[in-house]
Amino acid sequence: MNNDTQKDVLISTRELTKRFGSKEVLKGIDCDIRVGEKVAVIGPSGSGKSTFLRCLNLLELPSGGTVVVDGATLFHSDMMLKKDALDAVKAKIKALKTGEYSEEVQAHKAELAQNGTALAKAREELKDAQSKAKLYAIKASRSSGSVTEEDVAAAQAQCDRLAADIAALKEQSSALRSKIKQKRAEAKKSADPARLAELKTELAAAKAEFAEAKKQHAAAMRVTNASIDEHRRNMGMVFQHFNLFNNLTVTENITLAPISLGLKDLKAKRRELLKRRLRGEDISEEAAQLPDKLEIIENAKTTAKKLLERVGLADKADVYPATLSGGQKQRIAIVRSLALNPRVMLFDEPTSALDPEMVGEVLQVIKELADEGMTMVIVTHEMNFAKEVATRVLFVDDGLIKEDAPPEKLFGDPQNDRLKEFLSKIL
Image 1 (tube, rainbow, N blue to C red):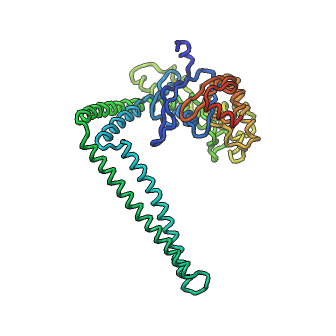
Image 2: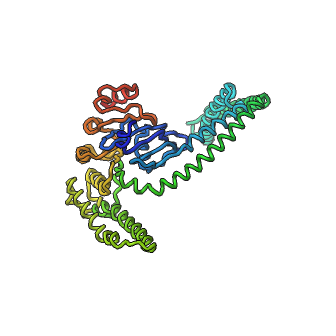
Image 3: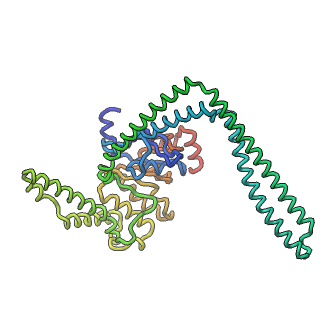
């Protein structure tokens, strides 16, 4: 990548991963988003689209990789990669010492799992059969004629058969556990001492690398936490659901963040100027230029009024969200993000929670932002909208970007087989 191209990159990710427990949602995303681009992210549900978007501004903390925003590293960690390497060495040692991953042991464990499933099913059937047999016995004792002694005997015989099946399954499971134990003992006895010593050396090195990676991760997170608020100001986020405060008016929802951040900045600047004055510096000119609290509040309200006019909701300034339609609420959510004057807007399926007739009014606002040159990343299921507005489309599947192309090429001449299958179902 040449220097000019690098200067245009607003957001960059490298080897971005995210795990929830043992489930790996993002498996190494490499992506550059340049100033002025409108990037649509499409793909099947559960493919990692929304997780990718939330990792860009660290609403979801990545498990590994790098996120760079406007030239500044927002997140970097290879801790999980080092942990994977450590776990791999541990698995090798376990395999050598116990034969855990040999074909025979794996086959026995699979059969043991099948027995466990069959045993659970048989126990449930026995419970039902015992209830039935008990009911039949009660009915037979009343001599009502609806249940005969033969029925009672058949029900009891069914209980006996199931009990015998359970006993057999238990015996088989016990035998399989004995075989697994025997194979592990044989593996431990025949383990190559030289290979085991070699793996233990690898384990020590892997532990040291993981410990160092954890230290570096902790240090990187301290830097990230110190700068995250500043970066998030430049990255507006619009969610699937509106997340408006129902106890605040529309104007109060929009001005809440600008006023809070403005007062926080004012306090920090005053503190810095005080330190400089105590060092003997002349700060009178800079102090005179600082806005006061009322000015910050009035500026935020003025901005809110202009933005509401822009989306055709000026008459809703003083109402509460409960009185608005879904489409109006989502337009307010967009305005709320724009109030901080971000450099990029992130949209997470902004129309998915709306009635079909309200989708158009929200998409129109997003189109207008696109026409004005706003950099945007939009996770969407609206394929026609992606064709019309996006300058690039990313197809995400199974935690990876499978195809990245202009909309006319991605929709008109898809290269990836999974993308072809996806488009065939929705277009």
